[in-house]
Amino acid sequence: QPDIKNLKDEMEKQLPGSTYALLTDISRTAERTGSRVYLIGGIVRDLFLERPNDDIDIVVEGQGIDFAGHLQADYGGTVKMHETFGTATWIHPSGLYIDVTSARLEYYDRPASLPDVELSTLSEDLYRRDFTINSMALCLNPEVFGDLVDPFNGQADLRSKTIKVLHNLSFIDDPTRILRAVRFETRFDFLMDKQTESLALNSMARMKDLSAHRIVEEMKRLFKDENPPGTIKRLFKLRFWQQFGVDDGNAEQSYIHAGQLKTFYEIHKPPAGRKARWFNYFAIPFFTSRKMHLMHQFSLTKRNHKFLQDLRSLSDIQGVEQVRQPGAFHRFLKHYDDEAIIFMIAKENMENEDVITTYLKRRVDMPVFLTGEDLIQEGMKPGPHFRGILLDLEVSVLNGEINSTDEALDWLHEHHIQQD
Ligand code: ATP
Image (cartoon, rainbow, N blue to C red; front, side, top):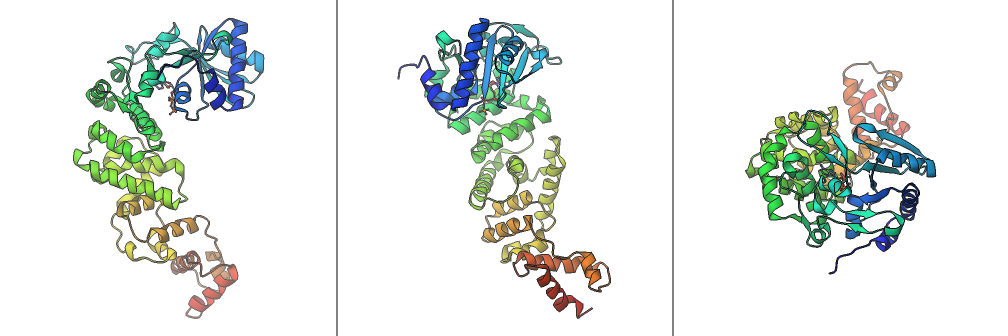
């Protein structure tokens, strides 16, 4: 297959019309101001792979901030400057965000301070990126619009489905790149080449030097991506989990659990927030190895803490397998969050999954037909037994046996008031 040298046609064909129009606008401003301007990063890669992406990142040879100002002058919108880094974000009137960077070099030998920034050429900018497939650029100036700049031959690596670093110190400079490599591997069904994989293995111990926050950010991106079970497995192979106290022996079980969890989400489409799902996958290896306490090193949110607590007590609950009515689950599970419940049933691969899902769906917007106040109104003496009565009522509502306040009152009189 001959190398592609210009991608103008692909850009026109694949990008949304508004994105393409924006690029031609940027092209005109480049011409007017005599700046050399490039489209870079994930969007270039994804044009080759024919995957949708309209994240516009541009690099300017010269001052990125000035160029963002020119774009604003020509087409409106607003500019947000990040002066320390010589970058700016142009917020187009349509609401699109366009990141504008100066071609620059970063030095990694001053870890305590912000990176020193120095203007330089495009190739040097590309050289500080992560992988060859992400280090391609497209010229945006009119006479060369769509011309490919590919100094590390990313095009060939895209063709052979290979993730390759640009130099041997890449993972030492930034260990999060190992996690990025895994993300691209599993997403595109690519593989690191031998050299990159052995560098990843050799640098894995550095992962512990990263702040918990950075690891968590990468985990979110990894486990929101397309193949969480594959990701978990790959991270065992690269000895990621092992750095944090999980043993090799847990790989297979973790992979199976993650697969069942993924299937559960796909089949049952439970209401639980998509935003929190990544954490369930992240927790699996720690859960499998019975080392949930190790997760506390990842500065967790309140919601994460509740999840861990729920898992701990859910492990002890007996008898859930026999339940056949949605409401009956409520007696066991009322106080537990959806995510923890789903995590446990996916692990057990239980036969009554459907009933549980119905329970979770119904409890989201369970109507409240009676409160303690209503019971008093009906002449009952307040006390701790109210709690039991209201729970019984909820169970019947979740079973679909009570559907209105009138029915709830009838139920109350039949079951409780006579005996009072
Ligand atoms: P996605 O489709 O997941 O957004 P992306 O490649 O667009 O993937 P971003 O995280 O948005 O990923 O990064 C944009 C570009 O910035 C990448 O293509 C890469 O060139 C560069 N980049 C991002 N993070 C790093 C890093 N840690 N080290 C080096 N280069 C990076």
